[in-house]
Image 1 (cartoon, rainbow, N blue to C red):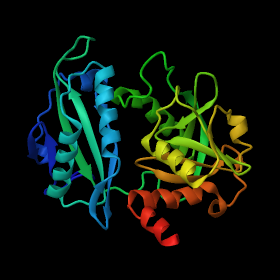
Image 2: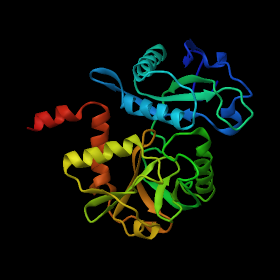
Image 3: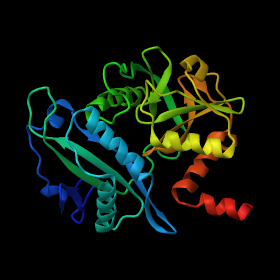
Image 4: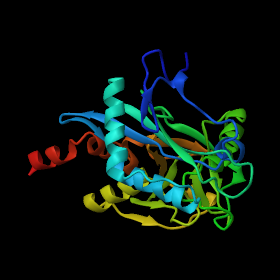
Length: 299
């Protein structure tokens, strides 16, 4: 069996709840041949109020946005998508889970978007993508795509070749992850998460335009604003990042994870004393629905 399913697993495919082995795929699919498909990464959590999908609406809005800009027909509503996902979690008896919806295009060997699509939603139990230990990262030789070459803010399946190349390079070089620069040699993001740096008690993160503006990134900025933690969206170079006190990544799969070093530079501030560490715990409370309760008790 796969690492992602077993003989009791259930997935959703266009109106059917089936075992993964029963899935019907078209070998002429444009997603398979050209990478023209749209996906999302979503998490659900076990909370005191039951199973909660974190920011389902935001994730499914982005899924629908991706289909729109890639001219893929897709007619599911946000409510329908959310309801299907909760049903799928229940059928798999999952509470803490990672959820992967994907819009797969129909057969079309031409380069215009296929006018057929199907929705597949899968879920599995998955820990933090990058683990819990501080990461040793490198500057990648690969850049993020030019924003004039594609929609960098849409989760198009084919775009992730760029991430795979960067991640493979890092692994082969003995690092945990890679930092990719944009076309102007500013820091953009890592292979699958956004970047924040801390300097002098303030956080900085690359602005929209050359990055995938993650939903976790948005949540962290919202938490900063609410908790009066200084944060600014601005461009910075890899040399400036190597003068930072600390740094961390954010993403749905990774959640919040701190960095130990970048190339030959070790971040000097102990992780437990950083704003990133504080936000890691605030984020966990947020997704579990605990933060409001804790704040009300403190008043």
